[in-house]
Length: 103
Image (cartoon, rainbow, N blue to C red; front, side, top):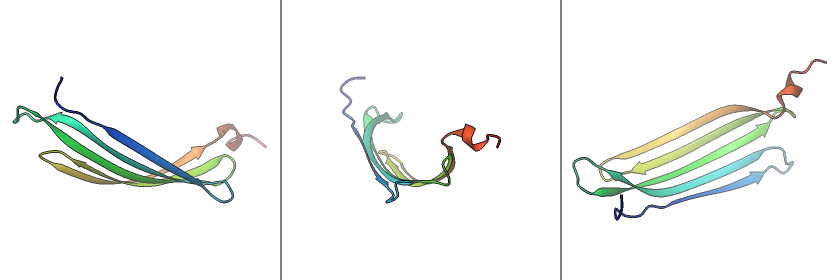
């Protein structure tokens, strides 16, 4: 496909450590355009995508930590619009062998 147009994308992130240096908070910002085909139209159309996400990592001890995140996404095409919200939770093991070793 040639001569249909141009697309671009940008992604930025900022990470802030806690004062004690144990946990982190990270902000992600994304923006892009892309081309897509629509069957009823003989030309390609541009779509736009924007997103923002905030993630937090908090260690519970030297081996185990929790991850929490929230995000918002907006995707717009020439014929439709989508908006979504995401929430995530997770566990992180830094050194699983330390967590389950015998004493």
